[in-house]
Picture 1 (tube, rainbow, N blue to C red):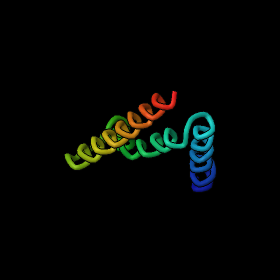
Picture 2: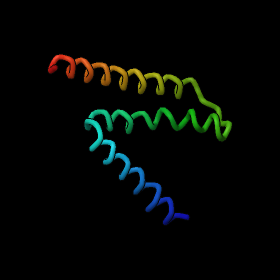
Picture 3: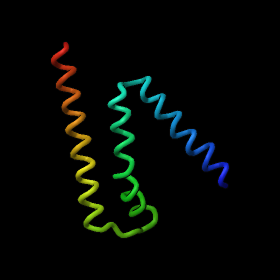
Picture 4: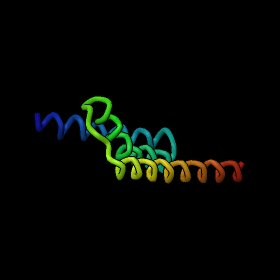
Length: 82
């Protein structure tokens, strides 16, 4: 079980991360990487019926707001270049 998690899950995550960098920009791949900590508590709520605290909700909102600002800023830079 530990080998499966260590090799396949972690290795697959890194492989897909690098494939995303090839298909798009590095900043877009980093945005997806940074959204994962916000997505994990939501999936834990849906799958494991865990309780999400107010601090977790605030953290998720901050992560999403920062990711949106980065995405909007990158989009504006691309539009200026064109």
